[in-house]
Length: 147
Ligand code: HEM
Image 1 (cartoon, rainbow, N blue to C red):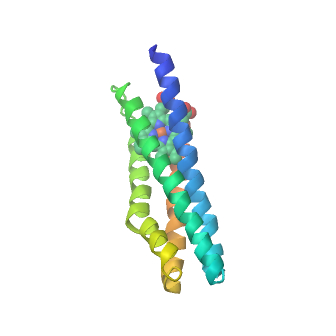
Image 2: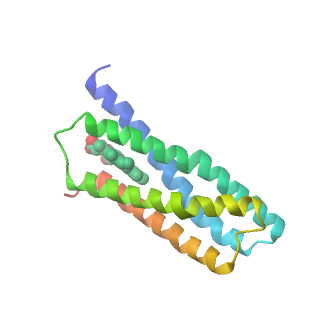
């Protein structure tokens, strides 16, 4: 396959990954406040949906974005611009928040009786919004490539 076509395929997959990842994280930001206020049965169902979104969208998207992003970078190894370094670091921060706190929190909430204490739910909401914001900044950096 010609080089330009390879880059086109990789970039398309990369943007699909970004759509899944940011779509999933946005969905979580919308679901969490609903789940926190829902009655028991509804709460269980909402957290189960959130966990499905985690597996099908957030995990898939973050893996896709990482693999295709690194491949595009290797294909053009001479460049190491600021937007790529910062974008990668912010991605790592967002995935770190997800793996260390947000995903375990959803996994527990899906089976146990709700999310646990109210302060934990409030913390999860804040951290969810921070992760979302980090990824929005990454999209800006990747698209605008300002430095
Ligand atoms: C995990 C590390 C990542 C690496 C190594 C990486 C690397 C890259 C590279 C090399 C490009 C191609 C830029 C070009 O050739 O012009 C690109 C484009 C892009 N990236 Fe990433 N990326 C990463 C994560 C992300 C994340 C987390 C998002 C969004 C949530 C994202 C969204 C985009 C978008 C939308 C483009 C298309 C920009 C355009 O063509 O206008 N990337 N990325």
